[in-house]
Image (cartoon, rainbow, N blue to C red; front, side, top):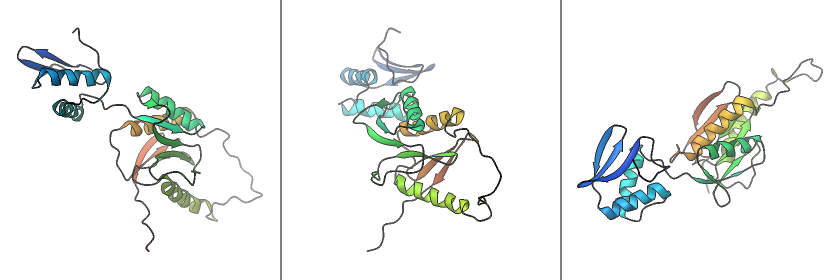
Length: 228
């Protein structure tokens, strides 16, 4: 078909005019679409240029295509703050997934430890390294609260006298970085995939195990405000 190309349409999907109307081709299935010529033109322009049509009917048609999984949502505009390995890997993964990275985008923080800035806005998502795991905060819970809870839980285990190392003890520890190889790639791809999703679970933290190479989800609620 000699038609304009759209990066938003899923593979094997096309929309075009026929005698008496328009057809949406999805794989080998043909669906008749009822739009007037001006609305179809607006919808095609949105699919080619990546914008949103002004016509209410064309905008509704685009939303229906997105809901049906035939059209990708507009890639998010993000700004990744952070200078470490996790931030660099996350930027690369987001770029591969088509995200628009640069100044003025929605901020995302990525750090190689679990020390988050005290002034981090409550609405800014963040991912960080905690031991051999990477944690991504949920949208509706401040990242600082999630990090503090995780740090408190692991800190209690580390101070258990039964596992505290004696000063004169003989032993050995790994000299390999935890943020490397397959673990780092999995964490970056998983976090990037969450950030480009149109909707995320508001109270669900995502945890990537850098050693076991697994991903898990954990419910988290915000700390209630202190009573007045």
